[in-house]
Length: 513
Image (cartoon, rainbow, N blue to C red; front, side, top):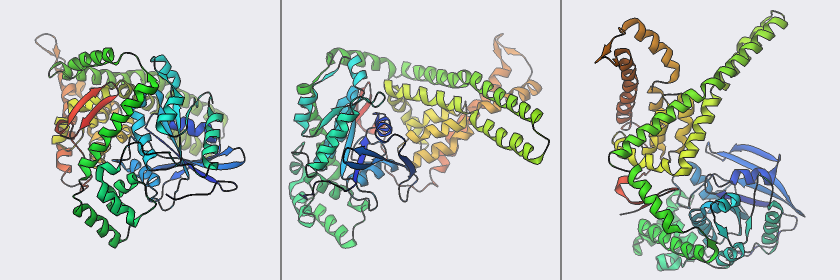
């Protein structure tokens, strides 16, 4: 293993990593304050946030890497984080990793942390959401957790700056102790593919066993010479290396060890009672008939909430800009510059900012659905239909949200990992009848359709209105089905229905059949 000298005057480069929604960005803001820069990672449109922080006698540059659930990337932003961690990014390198873990969902977050440990990268684990964990009745023995993992663990609260000083001290000590590597492998990686790992390490002696496995799995995506690519490919063939089987075995071994660590260092409420409640809940939410009715009701409430809750703030924004325009028109001279300011700048800002309430409400509700685990259940229920037209179960949310406004709906498509399915969702979402078309529909229907009722209570005008919305939905599915043959992206995806699965409050866990 490569030995590095302690840091004295050298600027330390820290990679900040973690699962999405683990408090990573809040910690980045707390560490760097106003010393931040935003750009793009080389060659991709993924945001790159860097900042500087002081660690006593040394200065450090902190890189906020995109959120990832594991070292098996699926999305473009996960590939960015992966290549930095695996030291395959030629322009960005990290001397030390700070892995952010949500204490209230520790079992899920530890998977990513333990993978980084086995890369033999100097690291510190920052535990966030300790207040939420406490409210859930979860007690964590940090000293025992640190002992089991073999790396420093620090509890922090970025919102109150609690623990930030201790975190900086742990980072500084880890860096000064000759870049202290994790003391041991988390699992026996050599057991997964021993002969193949040994052959890879003959060509890359400084590699850890786990990093050698990743070269066997993803070497085609790395910037290696053609001869080395052929060499690794031949090692795979000679040793009958199976990437899918190796990955599945690794994940199972990690969760087995994580389960043991949780028993040793984490006290939680009775899991049996929680499991029984979850099973009863899933029997209803994923029922063959009631599950879809509940889904329609939830989507209807989501649509209505985005439409109705945002209406008053949108009216206030429009009224505010109208008053501002009137005031400026009355007080400023009648010149071209005044006309540019009022009818150009202010009117343009009004047209953009008026969508902010809908975007905030939509993203807040989607976050609520994700945190409760219902988003995974929505994807599970709708995946079978969406797959037939080239979409994904997660495409339902942007499409339904498109009935309110296509702008925030398209933004919410970022949650779809597969690039082709994400592009198809973005393509068809504007076909949904958004709220801006509602006045036009209302006027046309009032002019053309008679105000009569079927069976005494079904309004023909209302049925026509519903029909227009259904036409938009059907058109979107047809366009997606046709377009999937023209978008030539071979990014792999999987169907929920082709995997064994277990539904949990934080989402659905899938296993290869």
